[in-house]
Structures are given as C-alpha cells and as structure tokens.
Amino acid sequence: MSMNEIFELQKQHAFISKNSSVKERRNLLKRFANGLSKHESALTEALRKDLNKHTFESIITEFALIFSEINAVSEELGKWMRPKSPGINWANPFSRSLLIPESKGVCLILAPWNYPVQLTLAPLVSCLAAGNTAILKPSEFTPNVSEALRVFVNDTFHPKEVSVITGDATVAQALLELPFNHIFFTGSPAVGKKIMAAASKHLTSVTLELGGKSPVFIDEKYNLHDAAKKIVWGKYTNAGQTCIAPDYVLLPKGQAKTFAAHVQAEYEKRYTQNGEINTDECVSIVSEKHYNRLVDLVASAKSAGTDVLFEGKSIPSSRHFGLTLLLNPKEELAVSQEEIFGPILPVYEYHSAEEAVQFVRKKEKPLALYLFSNKRRKSAFFLFNTWSGGVTHNDVFLHLGDVRMPFGGANFSGHGYSHGYHGFLEFTHLRAYVKAPRWFNTTSLIYPPYKGREWLANLLRKFM
Image (cartoon, rainbow, N blue to C red; front, side, top):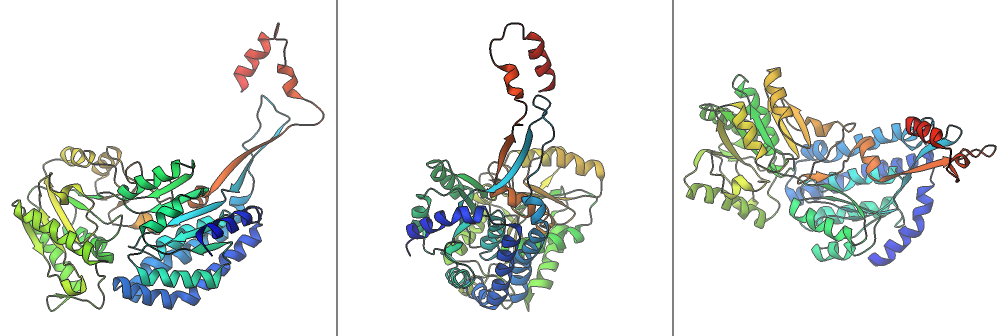
C-alpha cells in the first residue's frame, strides 16, 4: 500500500482505537511485547550491522527501556484512561464536570538513527496506550534496523494499527504533507524547526525530542575519579551519539590535568585492549560523513591552538573514534558551538560557581544537566540558576532511566514529554465534558434582562 492508502486506512480505524477498552489496549501492548521478544534477536543483529552495537549494550540501551515502558504503562493504564472530575463548579453546582482522556487520532513517529529501536518503539508504547494509530518512519542511516523494524511491525500489527514506511528525507517530507493529528519527532534542533514548520500547515500538535550541549558541573571538593568514571561511561556509551551525553565539563581552575588522567585511565580500562579500541564491544560512528565531521571538529580546535589533554587512537576503517579531551577551546570554534554528538569532550576551567553558571546560561537550554557536588548550597545554586530539560545529580543518564519520570526538553532542546503518564498525555486530548441537570437550569439565572442582578454578578465573581 502507498503511504496515502495507509493513512486513510488508519484514519478509518482511528475511531475504533479511540473507543477501545482498557483490556483491549492492554492486549495490544501484550502483543507488542510478545512480538518484540520474538524479533529481538533479528533487531539486535541489525543494530550490530549498522552501529556495531554489542548485544549487552543493545539490551541495556534499547530493549530494556521498551519492555519497562510497556510493563509500567500496562499496569497504570486503567487509572490513566478513567475520566476524572475536577470537582464541583460552585457557579453551576448541580452540573457534572469530567475530563475525558481521548486519543488524538493518526500519529506520525519520526525516529533517529542513534538509538533506532528504542526511539522508534518507546514513543509507540505511549501512542498505542492512548488509543491512537501510528505510522513509523525510521532513519535511513540505519537501513538494517529499519528493515528489521518493518518486518517486526508487519508481523505484530495490522497496517490499520501500525505501519512502517522506510526511505530517505524525501519520504519524510512526503509524510509531513499529510494531515496527521500528532507528530512525535526525535532528532536535531535544526530538523526540529522544519518539522514544526511543516506541522503548522495542518495545525498539527508536535512533540520534539531534540538535544543541545548538555553541561557537566564538578565542584572543587568532588572526587574526580568518581566523576571521571561516570562521565566516561556517559560520554562513550553509543560512541557519544546520545542526545543527553555530557557535551562539555566545567572544572575548577587547575584540576583539568588531574581530571584528564582519571578519564584516560577509565577509558583505557573499559574501552581499549592493548592501546586500541575494543572493536568487539565499542559502537561505531554511524556513517563516514558523521565520522569525518568529528575529525574536522578536533582538527579545527588544534589549528586554533587548543590544548589536547588526551586523545585516544581512532580506527577510520571501522569508524571507531577515540575519546578526545580538549582544554578550554575558544568560544567561536564549532566544538564549542555545536552539539558534539560523538566522543569529544571539551573541558573548561572556571574560577567561581557564578562564572560557571554564566557560561551555561550564554548557551541555549540543554536537554540534560549534570551536577557533581556533595555541597547542598552549591548544587542548589547551580540548579536554580540554570535551565535544562532534566537533571542528574552525582551521576549521568539516571533521569532518563526511570520511565515514571517525564523526559523532554525546553525551547531549543525540545517541546513536550515522553515516558509513562507524561508520554500518554502527549498522545492524548483531554476533552472537557459538562452535563447539566434536567431538573434545574442554573444557567437561566444569568439570562437577560440584567436589571437588578448586580447581587448575582458579585456572587458569581466570588465563586467562579
């Protein structure tokens, strides 16, 4: 079927999905989980082919989060779907008011290449739980995963429920011409602007999971070995191709070389063998284009006189990029301006917490912020004087790992939320419903004529 035929099929099915029961939606999610279990090995192999992702890393960063999401949503779904009363409206006390959660309709999920299984299917959990239908468009940069997702979806769902459409950017552009009821996009801020512009043609609501330069703040008394261990894991997981990866580190003046020594030791211990990247376990950069961009970022920084604190060996033939630490790169350099999305870590030294805060505030709001401090006042100062989508204190990524927590950015780093109840709400319209009593029409009290009704106006002003 063509994308237009699939869209019309799902449009026809949307009212059936909208009116599905808790039991029917739970059964759909159970079918989802069973199908994913059946196709997990094929999807894992596709992840290895496209990104050289190890099976264990695929389980932790792709599949575990999806299964956790399905389980958590299935457990709470009955409560979420139940109409809720906002309480008595004293201006109309005999009426009955309800907030009814209802589906938005036909949804489009545009997925990225960095976590191509998780970031395609986790939003789908929320979408289906809310009673919608969905068309999925996975990334062309991970063609093996896209094909494996297509096979999984065709084997698990009817096209009227969920369909996958593969292809390049022109396919995505064609999809955006259709009048979807909601669009969920994960990717770069630059593309996010285009998605938002396209959605505006149909006044389609959007969820944008974007990115930005996520800072790490380390105070002067924090254990640098502990910080380095956690930051290296966060930076080198998926070869740094993570929207919430630590993008740069803010360190007290004079601690950069000590920190770099801890980073080097931790990196070599966990990600190398005999001085070379462990290609059996480390993720590759997704394409030659993306690999060359990282090479250019480092080369430009070196040409501008930036000190290199540490530079791991890279393997161009397999697109494995070695972890690289840069000291105080100039603000005008691309590595200081752009989201890095790879294993390059700028380190900036600060003289005071106030200076560090101002450094962060000069940039756009990031998707994540990481604080390493055991001082309550210092942590509170940094927390309350900066913006970010989410925060993890004394570690990395933890605010993403709990599916009960909302995940999302603000302004440049995104709009809306994913995961759990907040993801359910993204794909839901809260419909206001008021039923007037048959035996007494309270509204008639405000019908004209108005003369002599000042007392009623004052009463309504007080209670409305």
